[in-house]
Length: 167
Image (spheres, rainbow, N blue to C red):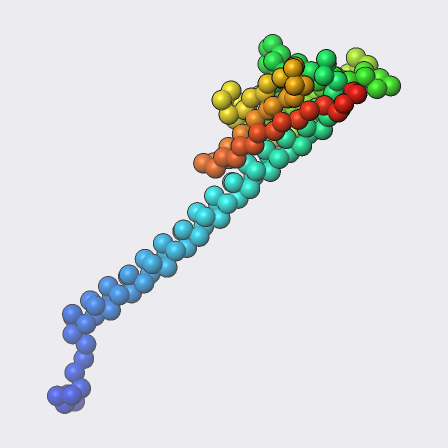
């Protein structure tokens, strides 16, 4: 058996414990950082989704309002409709927006023909304090608010759109 010299000692239990604790702390820090980055990516993706849905809804509704004739705008329709717009060009157009189960739908009929349905946006909050519309018949301006919520992230926009003069 080989004898150890006084300067050739092994590691003590305390030194091993210190190394294990330091390794654990470093591992915990790396894991926490990873989960924070992952959570931030998820929140950013949800926020971008909500923003995209609000912008899509605002764009399509605004385009239809610009075409609509002021006397053919119903900003407070009865029933489940969110907004009803109409205009006469070479034919009569009627566009109805409906908010159902967090989805905004657009239905268009031309000359009382069969309507075509299109989903405009998802994740739209149906709470009237968050998604609403109001037609100011004096100023001839439609003010509508759209809020989309994806996960815990929300985005809200307020649009003020006036139909084109002379429509």
